[in-house]
Length: 312
Length: 290
Image 1 (spheres, rainbow over the protein chains, first blue to last red):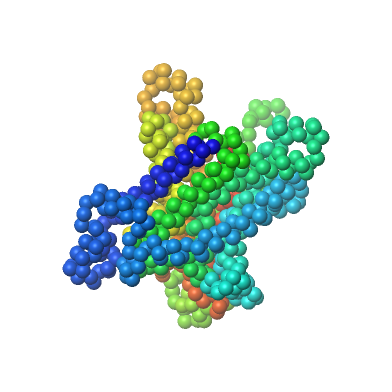
Image 2: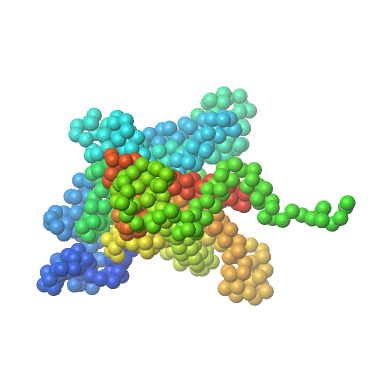
């Protein structure tokens, strides 16, 4: 298990390095000077030259990459073009809001989706199973920002039950402010997890070790809990791990729509003012988190199902 | 009456249509898709007004006989804008999926049939690209080259390529040691011939089914980027820009948000139901891990 974990960890680090290099290569390939892009068309040549030197753009690309990774290793992702503050600080201030949003969304979604999927599998082809099936396909395909807009429209504008703006002050208020955003981000994951758990439950229930347990006279409830569900949640774990990227995309919309602080809102405002260091820093951090989430889900699976440890 | 016609096998198309007819959700999906595609093709003739024409009538008007879906904050007819938006959505979907499938096919064949080291490098690059969230990556690209319809197409194509390439790679690897390929090799066929004549037809089917299931994702991304003001530029009537305009005035009138979102919901549901039905009919084993 330890060797497997180390191998996976090294691979993840490599993936992040490649992803960041790709972004930097893209920045380099695009016609036009990043300094000009940041300063706008009315900047004087002297100012552009100054900015180029300050950003290290006058040096060869390989040197720029080395400096970039060197700084990154020390936790330095450059400085904000306008305020001169450290990008690391700015990103780290926004991050907790997004992490809270994503965690709450996925917890409530998996908390409903997994039992729902298990129930549909046990009572398959009943009307509850059919309705769940259609509803999950429906919620999966509707984009999160449409869900968020209807959330605002119904619960904030028409009914006036829940706030639609900001993150709130104090714990209780913050929780109330999380309800609608977390609903919008999580609702499609109820569908995802219930579908995948249902499918894999049906598969596992046909396996020989389950038939064996039944032949030994174990109760259905015990078989489901101990022998079926443990294996059947594996694909759901993979799905959630791989889905963190989608959750971040959803968080961008939800943070903009509900005017919440967070990584998504930060990126959108940085794009609007062409603040490239912040965009790059925020993309880097989200990518690293996504790779980390995939790593964790792989390790959880290896822990739940030892068969997975063998093939890397 | 035992003539030959009575024993004729029903055509493959007939069997598939029969199977589709037995799947109510698939049929519903087909109907929705046909309606949306037809609307997109005939948009200029169907729209009652010019989608960008600013009317003298009421602004933020509720649905009426003259404006079936109401008007937006500038007094533009929402129905006309929604119809024109469908055309943009379909255009983006076709362009993006075409580009992503072509490049994904090429890279997947190379990874699956080429040398092992190249396969490893390509896999790492695929994993790296897949670890960008689509929207976040899209925003980064917008900072570089500015918002436009082409930026949207580029972003979605780049982020979808790894998905297609992986499927093609897996299928190609499964095929490369199949007996009919070995036989072809023994007869002296070159690599290009094997890939084009023997591997390609076998990987194209799953690829097309995946693409039809990806249409909702593409449309949602286009609408999403446009909603953020980072996609199709106003006044072009993308569903996303209609939603953005509507969101800014959501406390005045719900109609623009409803008009912009209902087509997105219908089209995503339509393509999802149809794609799932097609997959069940043609290739039940094809699963996608997101």
